[in-house]
Length: 411
Image (cartoon, rainbow, N blue to C red; front, top):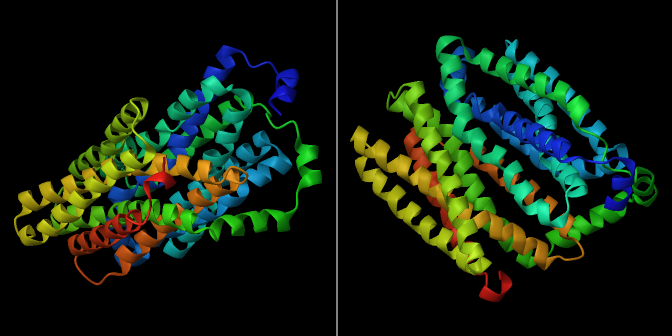
């Protein structure tokens, strides 16, 4: 396929740089569609006169939709083309985003959030296929690492941007901001993103839905895959539970201003960036995947201990805020050690089905994330207690399942 591409379009170094910049920014802004309004969740819940559980459905259903679309966006772009899939998805998402900003009904917002997720899922999956098709093997690793910065930057920067917008305007402008930026980038992408899939006819001829389903079921029935999934799924569920409930805890329960809350959220998000740098360093210095994940698991044990200690200091505001924030930061740090080696382990464990295995893992770990967001919302306790409980439960699940994985199964 790469051979065909190079004969259809010559990608200059400048075009490659422009392309990866546009894709990175698109990944950032589509991921920020959730991160940017987290500080406004309590305000929105009050405006619509609903419980946090109901309000959190705007996150839960968005993430569930992403999880489903991760399974089908790749095949759709095989059949329709990368360029058409990503641009049409973004246009649909932009329309939904502006409609959210004008909505007067929470049920309508939840429905529109499902539609909005189309753009995020398309950028997440199709961009990786574009990168694979225009960069050579030596470039792909570093380019993919640069591209995935969008996943790190969004939870680090978007909450601060959103908190400022919400403070001086209102929560609706956070969606308008996302819509305007997405529209600008999509317009630029119309000229920058070229079609990289020049085997569309071949894909159409070979496409067999039953075979695709059989491949997914074959992966899902593998016990090693289940263990990998639960290890990363627990970390995702824990952090998304924190994302969904943290604004209620910091702002409503402990009366932290939305701006300071966004700073704390940024600090927590940067834990992943630091952990990722350390993980890469250890990998380059000969540490096996099992050893790297084990470091993340040890950190996760400290998270459970620290979070349990938080129970005794719930009435001491500054101390509690410091401990629970540190716990959130350590959770993100642990995730950076756990997730990438598990992804690589999946690729090596399913050599003939690695695209299905990785796609299924990405989909189901986001399903875990949505489940965490839902569980923390329906718990009948104070926000802080809900966060403590979900952190201990889901992190404990990760630790327990990792204990069943042998060293040779995760080299």
